[in-house]
Image 1 (cartoon, one colour):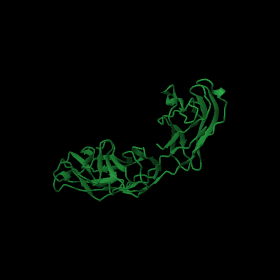
Image 2: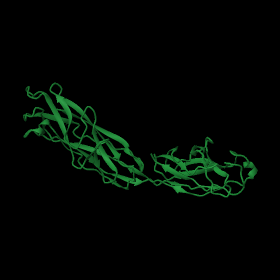
Image 3: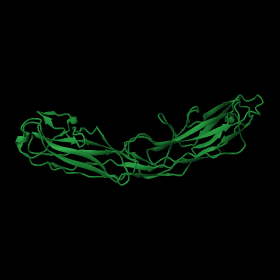
Length: 345
């Protein structure tokens, strides 16, 4: 049996996502929650907060939703209570997101990047209010305890199914133009005391995996070895080798082909029996897993995990191919082909 090489390689993308943020603050800022212009000094801690770097990760064309790991930073707003003089019952701190963001119904406030399909997601975690394009209340501080902490989270999101072009992954800066007191809703009461920035940029590159395209030659056997339906013969090992992938990529493989038929009825794809284009109409080729000897599903929908790539290490997917008599062999040639697909979740 000659296995005609038929290769399908989906290309994935690897990204070195390095993200850092800095909060810059104006001194002697103020906040007020009663709309009358009364001010109360506020101090953020830390005065220079950084979003940690996001670890390296790969992005496939089929990925959708969060990619990579989220990073967080906490900021505590302390507005004191020694000069309220009974006027202010509550301090509300608002954030003004930068222009250019979009609000996705699933992932909230997203900022576009210079790479298509990839966005930066910015959220303020509970008990803060979710951020939107409009001014959003982050924290409400009552008079008896005028101090509270807000946790910000940043993560990259991929929207839509499709390839990601290589390029520099830069975002709008700053993502938060200002933090303001509650009196931004009334004239003369606004006091700006900070902005949230994303420092640096990220390079996204395509995954450069390479894989073998084996041609499997089964031995010549006598037709008497395949004289009854369901008989098998000529089991032969083969392997698909994957190398050159970036380190840390989860790789899976699936096989697809046309199932053989018996008396005009297609056999289940889960049986791993592929239709032959050879001259013997009664003999097909069955694919078995190289580790378990179980039939391999050839529907293309069942994946086998090959593990995580390591630098300089080749991933190997092992199989066996064998003749399979759908009906008693008539004698002649057998030839089948299958497509394998590599995926990078």
